[in-house]
Every structure is written in structure tokens, then in C-alpha cells.
Amino acid sequence: MNFFNTNLQYALVALFLMTAYIGNAQTDVKSQQLLDNLTSVIGDYKKLKSKKDVQFHYVYNNFDAGKDVSAERLIFDGEDSWATYGQHDRNVLIGKKGIVQQSLINGVPQLSLNGKWVTDKEALGATVFIREVNSFWFSMIYKLGDEGTNHKYTGTENVDGINYEKVMLTYNNAVTGKAADDEYILYFNPTTHMLDLFYFSLPAFGVKDPILKMTMDYEKIGGVYIPTKRKSYAPNPKTGKYAINGEYTFSNIKFKNGYKPKDFKLVAM
Image (cartoon, rainbow, N blue to C red):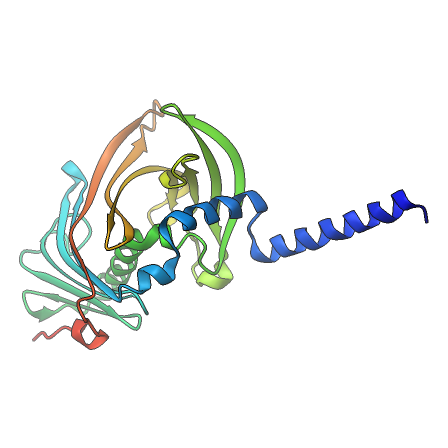
């Protein structure tokens, strides 16, 4: 075998090994580089977990469609969470008057209204969803490389004068255990390396394709980056033009409060 053929074989073997590795990781080289660039700026999930827990004020405002206002608490290790709602016109016991409390401890939900247990299965299922999704939105940029995530680089797109690098993020259903997972198209800023915006699907609500848009503005609090202001946009079904349909704000953020899972257990009648 001559020198050229020998080196060609070595190159093909190296390419096979690299492809196999990428296939197992479900992340291509370019996507991994973008994720690594983000991590170099914000740190990894261990950095967020080092804050132990957090409490914050959350305003979820869908304008004419309704608003939820809650005090939230979250323990990063295990992602146990708790919330109390003074206003809940959008996602939580819509039409019911009074104070709502939710908790999710070791995956088990609790729900009360004005100090009385709510045991309706649908309401408890919604409690699990809200507790998990509120935790996800707070921690999202630290969770883009979680186990079960798949990444595919899809090129660049110029948005408002910035030539963003795009990555399709999907999930392995065998890992998540869900019938259908959300999909995302992530837009990485080539200068700051931050995730400025993304498109996403919501199969739980019948939106099967990533056509919803979210923009994010960050604050660095206690050394970690939090998307304290998000705005969502949806396309007009007739014209395809996007219009804002929601604003979501985290404020009064405080880490290391000393919470334990037992502190999130509700007491009701």
C-alpha cells in the first residue's frame, strides 16, 4: 500500500471515530463550539448549583390573555420548587379567587387554594408542568447541554444587523420520558456568545413546530447570568408577521436562602 492510500485510510478512520463520537454525543462539532463559547462566558450548571437555591418575584404577562404574579422558590439540586400566587389569571386555577400555593418535591405536586387542598388530577398535572417550566426558564441557558439533548448546526441568519449562528436543539424521548418534547432553534450572538433569542415549539399546547419566538435580556447577579426579561412573539396565522404576545420578568432575585425540600411542603386543610 502506497503512502497516499495509507494516509487516506488513517484519515477515514479518524473521520469515522469523530463521527461516531459526535453521534453518541448527539452534538456536531460546530454546535459544541458554540455551547462551549457560551459556557466560557456564563459558566456551567455547577456554577448555578453553587448558589444552592433562589427566591424571586415572577410576573408572567400575556396581556389581554391574562397575567400570573408569583413569589417563587427553587432548590437547584433536585429542582424542588414552591410558589404562591396573588394573581393567577393565565396558567393557574383560572377563574378561582384567592391565594394559590404550589409545590413540587421529588416530583410529587401539592396544590392549595385559600389554604384548602386541591386534589383534582388535571390541576395537579398542571402544577407539575408549571413548576417544571418555571424552573426551566430561570435556568435555561445553563441547561442547553443536559443529558438527552441533541444539537445540529443550521447556519447563520442576520437579525437586526447581527449575523447569528443557529443551532437546532431537540431531545431524546427515551431520556426525557415524554411523549413529545419541545424543539428550539437557538440564536447565538457571535460577539458576546450569548443566546439572544430562540424559536420554540409547544407540543403540549398543540404547537408542533418551533414557530414561537422568544428574546432575552440578562442581568449578572451573584456571578451568574439570569434572563430577567423575556418577550414572546407569535406569527399571525394569515400574514405570518410576528407580534409580541407576552412579557415575563424575574426580579428581587436572592440566592442562598438555606431552603430544604421540607420547607416547600404545603400545609392546608
